[in-house]
Image (tube, helix red, strand yellow):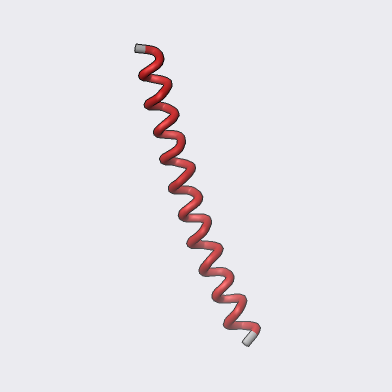
Length: 40
């Protein structure tokens, strides 16, 4: 049971990190777009 729980935890945290990374990259892209709009 403990092994299954730790495996499940590892996969969910990996997925969460992936989602966080995507959110961070999209946030950076949005900020870049905003800053270029301000410059123009």
